Image (cartoon, rainbow, N blue to C red; front, top):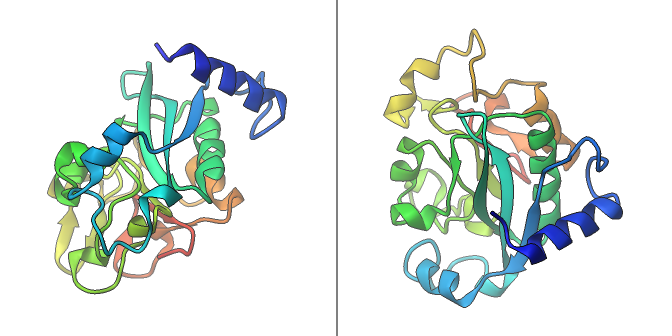
Length: 217
C-alpha cells in the first residue's frame, strides 16, 4: 500500500487537473520527491558518479502505480530530471488509464546500473549515467534523466550487432502486436508524443523500440 501522504498528493494533483480527469484516472497514484538520502547513497558509484552531466540535486524520484503483466496494480520507482518529472507522471497516468501492461519498474541500481542486466529482466527504467550504446564518449539521454525505456524484452534494441536484450529476439517481428509491445500511433506513443518526446521505434536504423526521450535520441 502507498503511504497516506502519497494518497493526499495524488488527490491534489487530480483536483488541479494535471493529466487526465479524475474519473478516467481513478486508482492512479504518483509522488514526486527529491532523491532521499538512502537512495542517493545507493546511486553513488552505481547509476551516478562525479562527472555525470546532471547533478543529484537536479534529479527527482517518481513513485507511481502501474498495471503489471498479471493485470494487477503495482508500485514502481523511476529517477528522472526534475524538469520532466511532472510530464512523466502525466504519461504514466495515461498508460494506467489505458491499462497498458508493464513488467516491472525498478531503479536500475537494483541491477548494479548494468543496462544489459536491467533489460534482460524486462525492467522499465529511466536515469542511468552511461554513454550512448555503452561506447565512450557521447552521453545517453538516460544520463540526463530525460529518457525512459519501457518493457525492453517486448521492445528490443535492434541493430547490425543483433538484438538487445537477446531474450527479446521473438519480438523483432512486430506483427502481431502482443502484450507489452509498443507501436507507432498507439497509446504509449501518443502519451509521450503529447509531452514532446520521441520514440526510438521511429528511427531508421538501428531501431530502439523501448526508448523514449526528450530529443529523440
